Image 1: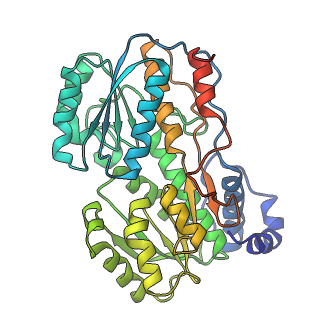
Image 2: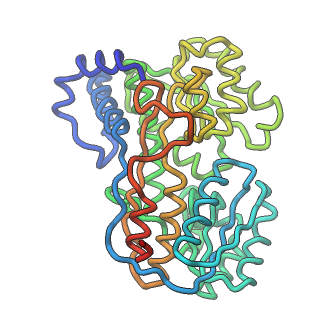
Length: 386
């Protein structure tokens, strides 16, 4: 984020900001773009500071002798690799036996992996970017056996985006703290809303967005819903073009070509929203550079994994990212499973996000690290210090 632009926006919107509320809920629609711009700026300022906080200090003694299965949608995707590996790290820290099952981004293989985990005698399963409907049958068998089931970027069979009529097979969700607690739908929606708020603020309340989506992933659909609804609250903002890519297209020229086409068809666009890091790397950044618009487009990236941060540092078609620490999410999932084992309600994980660009919270030459020692906090709660 340009610090000079932030200063100008803050000065212009200062009076309106005094009337704005906090981030406990998405701002309400308003007919005045200046009024909404003030709310967008307030949300942006909060995202700069970081919306996460310390995990609950409530004692949650480690359940002994447990066996955990981690079902990853595919270790060949960094979006699954990082949280899945962090679940394994946390499971070993708490003293459990853990096995990682790699779905290799092949949904047809996922049910068999869940069945294998159930047959191996696990007491807990963590699904990483594997939605319930894709593995409903073996997951129902796991639930019948009393196996605790928790997801990371994964949604239960009764989610509204699946029609809302399926069985609830997850044991619980990670607790994200107020205001959403264990509602991953609202957490994802608010995350997308914050990305939109920053885009609105950075375009002086006049965002014209090319929205890149991947509707095969439920988490992306929720984030996009939050983003789209928030852009609609700004009277002088709009989504001028939309591109729905698929993960399989990222290994071909198709995804980049589709984004490039949208950018050429919408020369009035001043912003781009990417769905996730892999799409940024394979399609969004290359397309922005190819049309020679890196300097004129505000590009909101994906999850902010290390390769995406590199693009920000080098000014190669990415302006900013809003990072939910995926390694923290992995530890929070293990903490949630442990709470279920010992008969407690899942504790507040403290999870949130932080805005990163080349001037505000500029990335180092490594992966992102939050300012909070969440690993130490969880070890203390589990009685695993020393």
